Length: 329
Image (cartoon, rainbow, N blue to C red; front, side, top):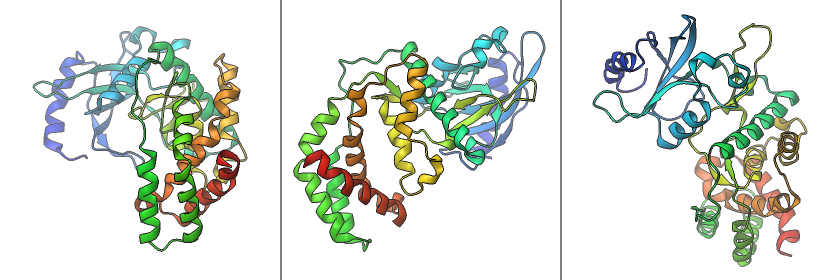
């Protein structure tokens, strides 16, 4: 049970009133892959025809997660089992709101998905399904809310991250220290050009920005025979970007253990799944991938405290050593 047990319990009747008593009792839980302090619980929901279905209650929910969960998943309960509803790439939403009684707490009631995430059954087919779902998410998000291409969006301070990394490398004894220092100093010399190229990328996609197998669950199938389609959860980091960013994010997570990708190229796979549903995946964006890889690899030492795994760091160093000559000469 999350912290604030008494408050959480006291708000359940309030939530049930808001939901016109379609929401049943709530059994709170905390999953091993769950982050943050939200209260999450299993419950049931009674559809208009009287059918009772399993659901999940969550509060408080951050603004961004609430916005995208509701915008992409809100379904008319009368169409709960329609083909269109079952095809959604994010959790279907039964109800949502911005307050609970006297408290400004955003909350959602969503469908119950099959646990655990697909990370527990990972194979080549599951990886492909994950990228299919990512492409469908990108398509649904931009259809729901086009990205404002003329708006100035926040960006990483790459120079600061690399400078922090240099300090960390010199302070901590890590493998290949001299090579790291040389690579980071070389990157800094040409960083302005790299950053300019990266900032010039097309900003026309809502990226998930946290794509990995622990954030993909399967939808419960009504017949019980099929595995159910994949659904992308945890929308708290959704933001504008270039479509390649989701692929490169997952690729970076697997630098130290590429076997988790089963020989699949994240960028090529996401490009294929996007094209399959009519989304563009042009060579112009793909050509920028190495720029992003260099920036990600060069900033890795800045996160020694959280991402200091020697195997991962050595893989990041290898990426930087391999790509720098072709990127900056």
